Image (cartoon, rainbow, N blue to C red):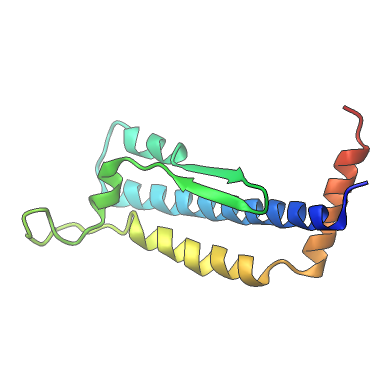
Length: 134
């Protein structure tokens, strides 16, 4: 039998991974939409690189969201060029969606979203997975 403390860690880890996967999916949709509307890239390389950018891994007592971006994407949404001139086209591709979803959605959900109902749902999912034969 699994100890109660280990079950709580598994529940928290699964819940955290779910929230981070949802946040990464929302960020991807928003960034793809913004890149499509603000940038005139024809190759599709930029959009395709987004889908490999987010990796969610479970750790012992939680989950981690990793970002692997092209360096070009990081600086697209700056309002000024490297030489200090104001850009004619400014697109909220990186910072705005990233921080909006990470702090607006993920942080609030992780802080207040692990209710008894969600815990029970994840406990049941874990118990069912142990009942299935390998």
